[in-house]
Image 1 (cartoon, rainbow, N blue to C red):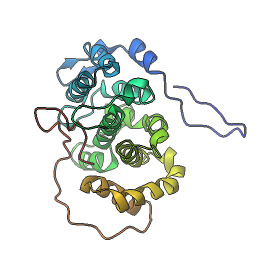
Image 2: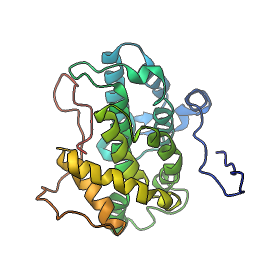
Image 3: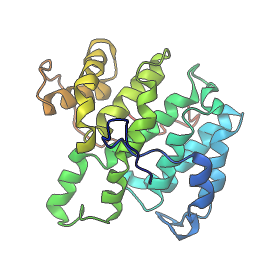
Image 4: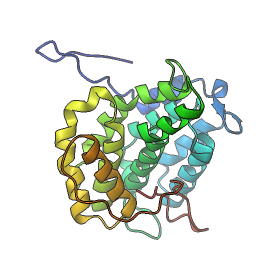
Length: 248
């Protein structure tokens, strides 16, 4: 992990490694997944860059199951997330999904948002009540949470994207990732985006994320709307795999 300094000597956020380096230098076969090890992950990740949008959607569905089964963070989740973050600017991310005329990039951002939520303060706070030491330094979840500044660096490039689906997915991912203390300086800026979600989004779970962020940061937020608490399992819902987004 690289750290660099600005002209004034202040530390900058760590740089995201190139996706090619993540793919080639990660010992995938030694990393835990819900079904064994991650030996098959390089092939799945590589298919995210195919020119066939259906193939990309299928690969993302497989990735979700292989590193996020039952909304759990595994050893292989962290490098997979770094890879996905690294390909957000790749031309393959601009292909459009079947059934919905929006870029694959929106689905990639939504996957990152869903994965980040699985390691969010809300989720780990609940788990810590029943599993003390869950967030001890060096544990799988703690190590994943340490990567949030790098993931934020990639996600934040799309906060003002011209495509609404991409923009909203980026905002939700950024709001969740910015729970990391090192990203506190971005929160006032992100509050503007959170308010835009509350003003324009018709997605109840996206609105919930935006409202909770504003409340946590001490900003005024509209009164809470009725919301049915439940599991944040984002799909896919349906056999056509057209809904590969988390319910944010």
